[in-house]
Amino acid sequence: MKTSYIFILATFFWASISSAGLLYNYSQLTLKDLDEVNEMVQKKIKEYKSDGGVQSLTEALQAVYSRPNDDAMVEKVTPPLRAELDETEQWETAIDVLVQEAIGALKNPKAFKPVVQNTYAVFLENIIADFKPFAEKDGHERKVIQKIRDAKIEMSKEALNERKLRDMKTHRSPSELASQVMDIVLKAEAEAKKTEAEAGKKKKK
Image 1 (cartoon, rainbow, N blue to C red):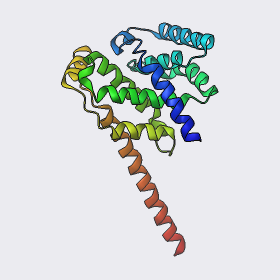
Image 2 (image 1 turned 45 degrees about the horizontal axis):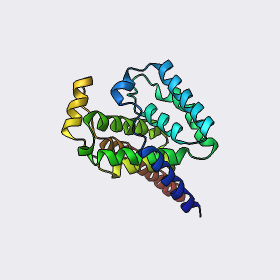
Image 3 (image 1 turned 90 degrees about the vertical axis):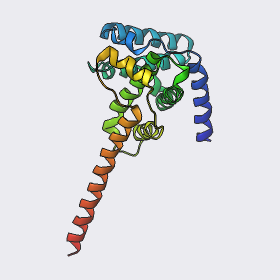
Image 4 (image 1 turned 180 degrees about the vertical axis):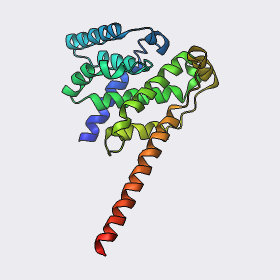
């Protein structure tokens, strides 16, 4: 029953946001300061409370995570959105559907302009960075990072060039970043198990 409910809810989310499109691309979002992003978030929360549709919240959530986070703004503006989504237990579903949308776009680059591809890439990068501290637990955050890793996303040459022209940096695929995170987590878990096993042997002696 729970699985069916999640499937139906995810389908609803997908139908809502897939037709909405991105509010802004990552380049436009870079130009927005904290006050402007907060204003956007509050406007979308007000829309949500007015019509009761989660589309307003998912649009804002997508925009927040699609802004390059060099100034650590994501963690400052996400809490109000999470609070609203947590209240109806829709946070995880919202993240799952938005992640799937981003993966789908990046796996089909010919359908999207380079700046749009990079907006989805920034979204996934920020999700990975935000969820990384919780990846050692077998919970939702870990599953999301694994999903991005397993998608084996390869950024198009056009997208890589477009982004490099804007910030003069070389960027890795979100799947590569997710894989790096999981490699570190799995290595730490293996070492912890080894240490625990050695301690157990010493106790027996």
